[in-house]
Image (cartoon, rainbow, N blue to C red; front, side, top):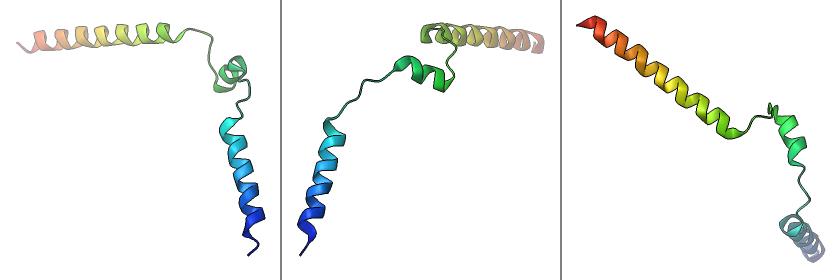
Length: 66
């Protein structure tokens, strides 16, 4: 007995969490996460450049072994 009121409150809170979607300020989120303002694709391009440099270094090492 007495669990009805607590269960009703839990259900109310669960519904509020499930259906309430506040407007997300993506700019504030980016500032908080320390984003530098560059698009994500620029970072992906940089990693491709790093991979090609690693391949060149490997090629130099492999050619020096022969």
